[in-house]
Length: 85
Image (tube, rainbow, N blue to C red; front, side, top):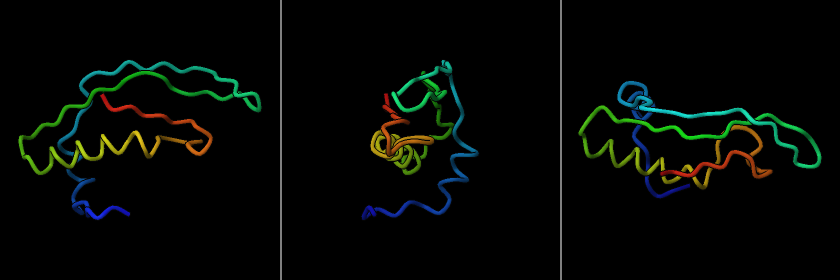
């Protein structure tokens, strides 16, 4: 829905030029009053393995969008919050 079109190679770029630098994740049970679900809380830091400015800008664009799009299941119920660092 955005006026910017992402490159068709974005997924291939991410697979070959992004790596996880460090992470700290923990599973947690959360009761929302209707059900009890298991989720993940923590942080994950990525590293880009290229200096190509176009691809770096694309990755920053997607990281910024992550706050608005949610991650995983249950995003319409408020689950899957992502905060780019």
